[in-house]
Length: 335
Ligand code: TYM
Figure 1 (cartoon, protein in one colour):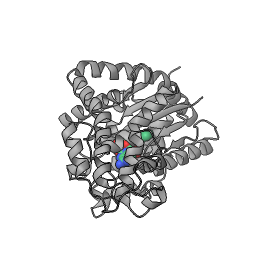
Figure 2 (cartoon, helix red, strand yellow):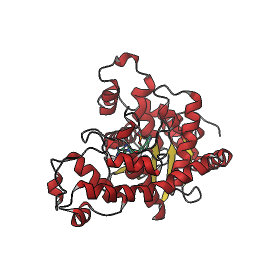
Figure 3 (cartoon, rainbow, N blue to C red):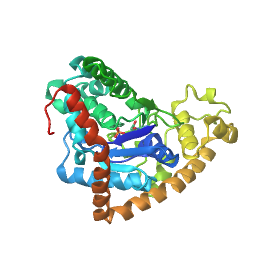
Figure 4 (cartoon, rainbow, N blue to C red):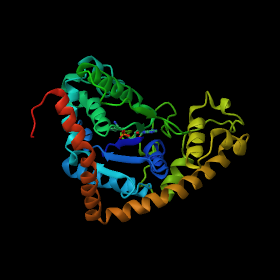
């Protein structure tokens, strides 16, 4: 039976890329009735420095973001990674299965250390993908919805499962399917169509934050970089127009349409007409999310209770899988 797992780092602003590439997809899976487990990955966040008070706030805000995006803590299991200790425990086993060379080939590792002294990066940052594999495999999850930037990490997850099964002569960990689907698997910066929208971009105008108010959202879209041509009437006309393509992809994803459907409506029309329509759509979809997030943030006890309960439910799944893993590896345990 399918079991879905995915995670998001509590490290600053949730943005439109996280919403369209991840949160909205997570809610779709939940509504299809699949077993769904969603995680704030605080242990991943600390692979780079996090101020403790900021981390606590970001974790609770992320939990509010999940719920405001439609994740129902009754239907899905909603957890904070550090509260389910089996993630870190399995990660240690995987640190001994995975090879240094595999980690060194990860493009995110290379990007994060590019132009810097890699010797000064944390050991946790290097081992990041091993913990991510543990997040997924400690549930025997079969499907992992993510944006395109996580593809290589999910391939590594399969490599770790394969090597573990092979080394110990078992058929224990499943080969997980990455699910990278929809029109917005890679939302780009509003200021530069060649860079992905990201939490860490110094320009706030480059992204739409889930906490932005309606005026801010409308203004950022109005000011988004474009070219002077009207919209094409077919998707192939977007090939060499990264900024135009990005805005059309965003529209399609927000409106649950295909790119072709959007272009059937807007092909031949100028950005001066398309942008206000996009702004209206974005505000209509995102302002309820931001209102609900701030309402939830006023009730942090409730958030903490949800996470405590989520961890209890999660451990019913993870404790037996970790126990079995330890047995396979040869650890002596309680009888
Ligand atoms: P993170 O926190 O960077 O991003 C969370 C999710 O948002 C997606 N995403 C985007 N999608 C489209 N366009 C964008 N511009 C964009 N930016 C981010 C990401 O692809 C991701 O799906 N390593 C993960 C967290 C993680 C995880 C896991 C994910 C830890 N363990 C296990 C899945 C399964 C990360 O840093 O995501």
